[in-house]
Image (tube, rainbow, N blue to C red; front, top):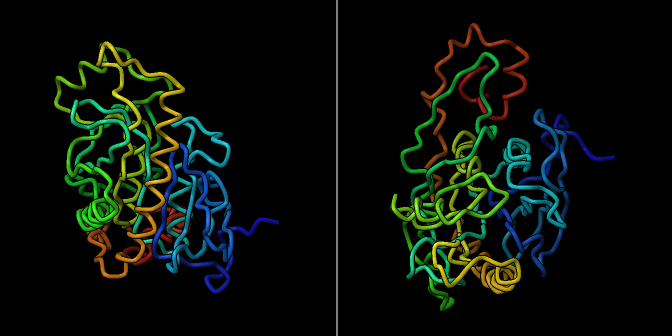
Length: 296
């Protein structure tokens, strides 16, 4: 039987670092599996059992956001459960891999982009652990970890992979790709890449006090280039090539993570606006892994 999140801390596996696999990255070949973690969180089950193991000598957790076999639409991914489960594991750093479309000529297919800003154009996805009698407003001016982003860029360059640092990721709802009008609008607004999954991941990571960075893998030019429409075959071929390079970057960055500082280890400090005396006991229990060091 799958173990529940209520089990004792001594029997819960732990991992300080996590990798979230995107389209085309559903497992990491060569990872030595130590255990699997598939808890029933207050927000349901995560996308897939989280694999805790060793990769290139480093311990980490791995979770395919769409589930093995790619079962979840971007808007269906159980993100609250995913990040609550990672919190139970003690994760502090999350390197997320994600396919994206390019909105600029210089960001070519098979290049990597590490954005430093994000714009949310999704429609009604749950994007906070809070509510139901408890209010929190975290700072989100800089949505991605500068330390982890820098480390990812360094690793990509060391491997000879073309990587672009900085830029704005616009998160659309999907699952259909952009219309030409949407693609041109996003270009006019100065966005750099477009994807479907970094929201609410970046927001939930901040509430969970994790350093989160995105390794965005360009598969296509969206559809703004009249002579280069998006086809499924094109996307799949570029996905496969990107996935192999992404795994190489992950192997290198895991070696650098022990030297990094988690900039957001206390991002909930001062962010909870609700008077603790009016928070329901059941809500405190539910969110204890997140708020326990601030509210008893």
